[in-house]
Length: 258
Image 1: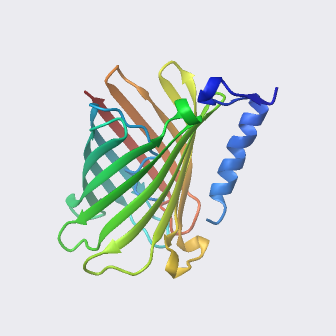
Image 2: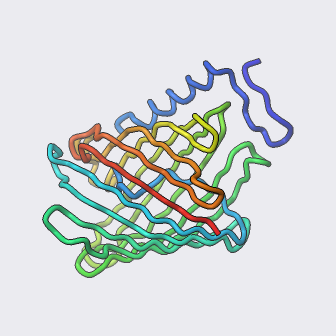
């Protein structure tokens, strides 16, 4: 059978060939001429009431051969709490160091997460995120963000798709909206650990009508899983596939839930 649903949860079970085809098609679609911070992730929509997580992230990018980037180290610490089964709040404090400079405070972000569709009822998770990022000192402008987050299971594969929109506000702000789609596809390799591929695509400001080479597109492997019942990790590498993207990007995340 090509696929079947399990009760009303509508969790799809596909043949291995069909599953692989869908994964490849998804990557082809999102990788066409359509990045991002090395501390960014391809998030999910799920929210759990009373669940609090503390997470530290570090990322490094080397852009020696890139047309518009430079060597950069980023870090961030965030705390997230589920107030209900449908809403969670998050505070993110980020730091940034460019080549030759010191590590400096970059921004504080306040994020609201809304869990709108549960995979037990609809076959996939879907949610929204709304955030405000306040930049430090002369690192203006500030930014408003709005994101769509979806997660679905296709046989053994977990597919995450994010679409993030941003708009600059405050001093030095430019008119227009920026867009950044992200995609991650993983499958289990050993108990508690997953391996897969992800791609980040930063279009920049849509009003600039920039060409592919002037945008930031990256692609690479990701590895994540559980260290213990309360601790998780995620690490990955992405290579730049456009002229303005960092040549190499590395990340490592560590989170504790309580």
